[in-house]
Image: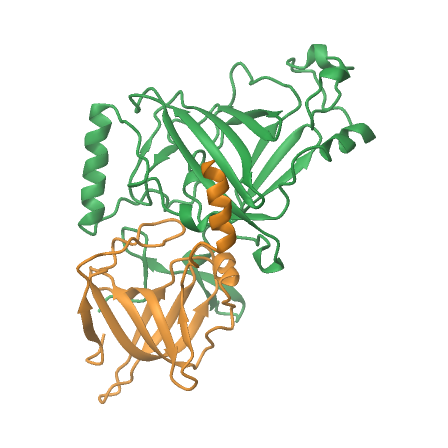
Length: 271
Length: 142
């Protein structure tokens, strides 16, 4: 790879580029020019929260075209929720995964640019994060399956173009807190993330999930920027709220479990 | 809960829960808005949802109930909305409006608290789109 063709933010890995997709490749130490290249990228600093006019979950906003069998499941889940018996989709504290990381969060996110990588840090249910490699690597031939998948990206002007594969089949395609379907395997997510205003960022997704979707699902989510310190992302453990502060027999301060009903809501006691 | 609870009104139009994580709020009966005067036991400032533990009572017979009233969001989001872990303190007398669990257990979805002593009102209100966001949205549509 010649340096002249490097995309902004990509490490000049000319010493190792020929072996970029081999198991023996190293991540070279960034050089001054690699750090300097980051200054040419758009400014995505600050904390990004779902835009007030785009906080809604996909439910009722822009639902995908499901395969017929899946559509019947979805309608049943909607009916269950309406009847006050919501399906406990995200109650087990496993990572929500993509695309829920983007479509379901109501908490803040932030973007970190470092040479060869964009890292998205979330606050949603446990400080989830995504690593998007922008160093020119390809997807592994046989990636270990994960909740957020394996993401590679490149910059097209001010747009970060991301391609994600390697997602666990259990990871949901979400419509809401209680309406979601596992992708069942082979999900592929393409994203174009870019500023659409001085303080407004849009993530446009095209989700292909051939085992549940009849056609690719095109959906977007907008985020707005804040710079106030009160918007700084905080530690957000997923399950702390499942426990209350208590004391053991020695007087040590400990966590004791809060009782929950089957849908995941806490209660103090039953009458 | 005790007799002090009163069904205030029946929602004909149910608004969507603004739950942030983990679970739907459909197990709470949004058609019932109950109110109770009680004493804060603990204001549990935890992710993913903050929980108000409230002692209702004692009534004339000396009995009291302990309730959890779940706020629909997290410390991070509440901080951005102007709350803090000191917004409610143990011992505070409050009037709380909530949607009860459908199964009758002592839990509810927090809607609003009014401190008896100061009259201060606490709600979880998502701000409307700002003028700035509106202008950005217009840029988006171009």
